[in-house]
Length: 128
Ligand code: HEM
Image 1: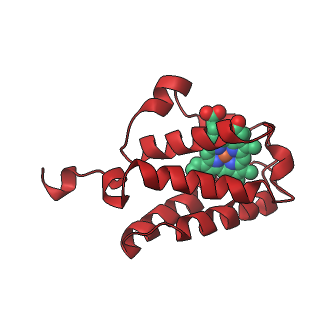
Image 2: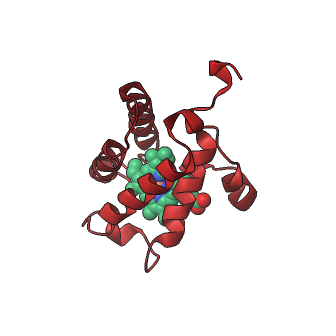
């Protein structure tokens, strides 16, 4: 296998990294005053798992997300939530802490983080 054929998923550390990322992220969501009311589940385990599976698939890992949920359609799936700049920033704050916990190359972390910033902006659906 040449370096180009190794997925980002593998380079950053595979399944355990995505599991830890989602679990750190959702631990923070649970105590965030803007975000917590938006997430319906009692314990958020289902939400954490969906995010983990989505990110694994996006970065070239297993395609379980697609098998279970179909096409991501993230704009559509977020349409029912009021996502303004404050919600985006709260989401990104939680995600920044979770991404910072990953032990990996600085360049990989930077790539992951830029993606998160772009994706969160793309999901803003309310002026304020
Ligand atoms: C911008 C701020 C964001 C807010 C306030 C937000 C909020 C939410 C909420 C309330 C849910 C429903 C919980 C659930 O059933 O899973 C959800 C689901 C989800 N979010 Fe976000 N989200 C944001 C950004 C993002 C970003 C940037 C991504 C991807 C990088 C993402 C990926 C997902 C995924 C994959 C799901 C589950 C979709 C499904 O299969 O049903 N979200 N989000």
